[in-house]
Image (cartoon, rainbow, N blue to C red):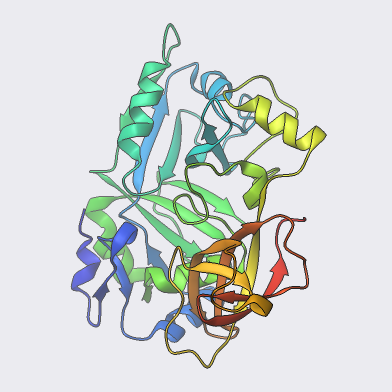
Length: 321
């Protein structure tokens, strides 16, 4: 779904999974600094919006999600996963309950499969699942923003800012009143700086929650059964995940950033060495320079110098070995 904010001056359309919103509006670092200072907003209207209503909404979701939501307080933001039977991450939901409705936003292109799964699990529960993407747009306000949400709009408030579930018809007028608008590249640079994994970027078909640091934030270890719980419990109690997420400082002399999927190797082995992982997201940060997240084998030494393609990289620990 193409955002009307792509018509703003300087807007350059994003590609790939973020198609439909702006990559930037002409000045990536200015947009990042504005967000870091708590001003402006980010257009996330390409994300899917799913709601669950009905008396059983929280108790029902509690059975399906990795997060403890059966007694989720009104207005408290949380995030949760849906796992495969083998414990691999299939869906990530960023949700809040307003007392009558659970609002969740999800990655572009995932809402249809998510809704199909939820519908298949309704059974006798008093719940209704709805796709609200056509009439609701997600807008992100950075931490420290003094912009107010319109009356009646559901809000997810997190340490990183607030996500507003805004009527799509009011997106342009809200942006005009509370801009400047920052593109998705600025938002992503701050996400990478914050070590926050994203479905489809830091995850692949075999990613388990421990590998990307989602235990505690999206996975509750003291709740009842859910699909894939056996894998979570086994890794938590008996072992270590096979891979771990790391943060990389990239060589700033390189012109091009290593893209998603770029092989990561030991610098000592050179560009022909054995692949130990891959770049998940890379970004240009207004203060840190070129940075990235990568998923690598757990046994790679914590102090090892790495190569991302041909680019030298120094690692910082996100998930302990």
